Each structure stands twice: as C-alpha cells, then as structure tokens.
Image (cartoon, rainbow, N blue to C red):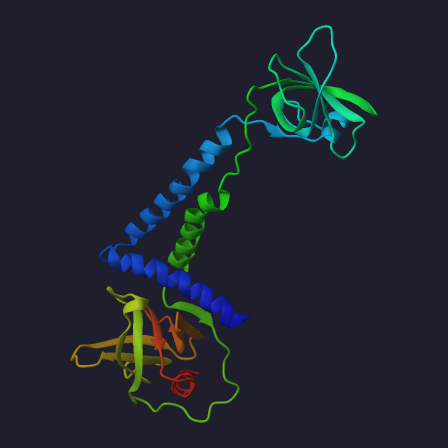
Length: 292
C-alpha cells in the first residue's frame, strides 16, 4: 500500500515538475495551467447545469407527489393509448410496470399508440391507482441527452493531480523508519557521497535538480554543542558550510521518484533547509549515527 501511495504521489509531483521545466522553471506557470484546466471543466459543467431540460420522472413519483416544488417540466415513458373524449386531443400514457397507473396526455398532435416517451408541463395528482395526473405534451418530445460528464470532469481531475504535485514537490518526500541499530558512524570530516537539494542561505536548489557532491560533519572549533556541516559539489571548489546543533532534530525520509525511491535525510541547520539523498541506507545510517 505504501509503495502504491508513493507511486501516485510521485506521478503527481513529476507532472507538476515537468510543466515547470517546460515553462522555463516558472512555478507561476504551473498554477496557471491548473487554473486553465479547472476552467475547461467548469464551463461545460456550468452550461449543462444552467440549460433547461425536463426531469426524468416515474409514475410512482406522479402518484405519490415526490416531485420537487420547482419541477414543472418532466419526462415520462410508458404505453401510449388514444382515448375517446368529447374534447379530443387526449391520450393516456400507462405505466409499463403497472397498467392501472396512467397520466392524461394533452396534445393536438396525432400520436401513434405504443411505447412512447413524453415530455411536457406536468400536473401530478395523488391517487392510489388510476389517473395520477396529466402532462401537456411537447411535440416533438425533448430527447434525453446523456452528457459525457466524465469527459467534462477529466481536465479538473488532471488539475487536482497537478495541484497535489505542486504541494508535494518532486521527488516526493515521504517519512522513513529509523534503523534499529547503527553498525558504524561516519568519522569527523569524512566525506559521504550524496545528492543535495534545498536552501543554504540564499542559494536554492530544486529537489528535481539535486546536485551530486559530498557532505561532511565535524565539530565546530569556535562553538560548543555545534557541528559544522560542509557540502561540496562534485567538480567544484565551492565549499558551503553551515552550523548544526548537536542532537538536532533530523528526519529520515524516502525521496520518491516515478521509477523508485532513494533513502534520504532532511536537515534544518542555521538558515538552511537541506535534503540529502544517498545511494543506500547504509550510507545514510552512518551519517545519522554521527549526527545522533
């Protein structure tokens, strides 16, 4: 189950990140895409909701009066029979399930007997059996339209997936359990290979653009109860050093991609928010053991 959730969240995050990249790294453009997709769904749904159309009713609805007060235009299906009336223009539409129930159909048109669908202005009449009302028929009857609601909702569903991806980021950060034992810990100043992302001071690296490099932890020489956390990119002479308090809160995580996940670590040193991805759990556990 956890793997399935990881995969779904990763697809959402990947979708948002792909749009961001195609838009030249603009986070605002991703939000505009979500807004446009919601509008694409909302416009036809609003049209469907505001278009007048007859309500589908049953003979039982007519007999018992279970019809909303605002409903005056309805649709009934049944067996149509011509009646003998001094006034003319009258038919009876009988319930196919219970022929004893019928409504009077008022129309000047010549309608064929047999199974029929009738739409028009309804006048229900409570009765245990027999005549349960009348309908002033439309000619021709308004056909039933099966709206492709799922087609209209599809852009909104896509928008929700992208919005979830915006909120979760990519790769998706998910909590991971801490190892019960630590076989060894990284030594002071030992360089551990990682891919890092996040914020160090004013420098920001997106999680999807994590940089390969090394991380090392050593006691601060000019402060007690503090460590120096140093990150160096591969092939670069730039050294980034920030302070991390001894036994500071750290969080073991999984950095979930569409194709899998990497063991990771979330740290919050001074003026920084850092994610470290490791090649395996053993490498992460060695650094965690040093920080603990």
